[in-house]
Amino acid sequence: MKIVFATGNLNKLKEIKQILGDAYEVLGLADIGCHEEIPETAETIEGNAILKAQYVKEHYGYDCFADDTGLEVAALNGAPGVYSARYAGENKNAEANMEKLLTELAHKNNRQAQFKTVIALVQGEALHTFEGIAKGAITKEKQGEQGFGYDPVFQPEGYRKTFAELSSVEKNSISHRGLAMKKLVAFLQK
Image (cartoon, rainbow, N blue to C red):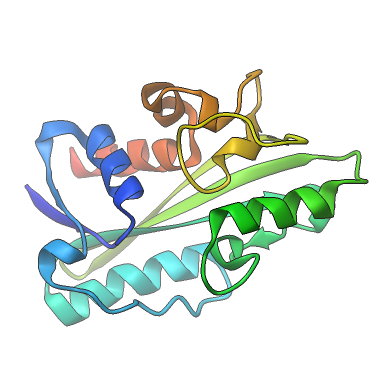
């Protein structure tokens, strides 16, 4: 089965292909000739996921799923949230985002946080959403070389390692995106 994942992020595409395995041929945006920046103008994570999936369906005709993810930090009233990728500026620099986050939390004791992913699937005329949440805490410094984004500063509940210190198999089994993907896969396999 062929399905489009509305992302230009090669790390995300690789992660999703690992999760879905051989049952699906997953195409990224570049594979369908979509090189424009899809607008992410919604005020919520769910809204942005829906916008991206609907954009691909409307402009390219493919059944599509799209995700949006936000890091929600308790001491920052849920920030950076929907602005996670652009937290330190429009250039979406992961290092700058982490530095800004660590600086803002430097004198805070409450370091509780959660990653939230919402996947929107547009299949035919139908729209479905799937949510995954990974609870944890923000570390005081970056640890690990794996993963991407905020992974080096996010320590999931029940672990002594950050996402960036876990193997991709370990991370995918407990991550926000992995949990949302399991719901999507279960739905697709019905």
